[in-house]
Image (cartoon, rainbow, N blue to C red; front, side, top):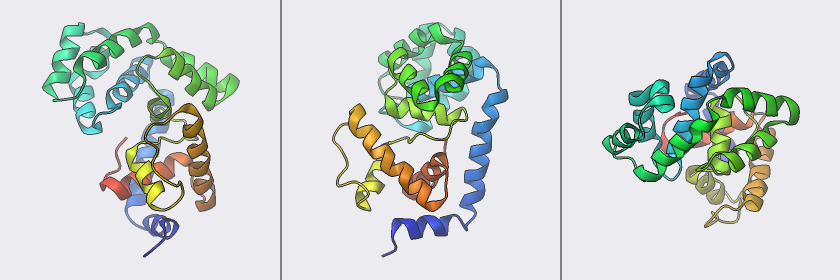
Length: 212
């Protein structure tokens, strides 16, 4: 049986690497996008918490940035229900409350410039209701910041299966999130990959897709 490192090195030599590269370029392009697009991406990441990324994408495509920014809460809820997405009441409330931060692009760019990505994540976790460390890391990755790990169930399962961590944690406290993240970052360094790149490869290994 091949080791995880061997499998990842092989993947880098396949057409998957082109898909990964394309995704990373898409994420990096957010630096040139307007604040509404950043807010739309924030809402997408709020939707993905404990739910499927595919249905979150459907909602994002249907509502668009204008809908996330301005639609009535009832219309947001109807769209979430239409997509058969979980927790429609909570997700609607999180999106509407997040509208206090329609200037999210300006805020995040300022924090990253002053204090780095980790502090930007801390700000998100403490100021955007519905975002934990995973979702905050997801948002930052999707708008072009590539140094934080998105420790979702696929990544954690793969890390546990390959003995990078002893077992998949039942819950992720800040302490164990950061501890596991260090191991993920060390693996990326060993493979000569940036963290966001490794995440996309490992997600592909579990799902067969290179999604955002």
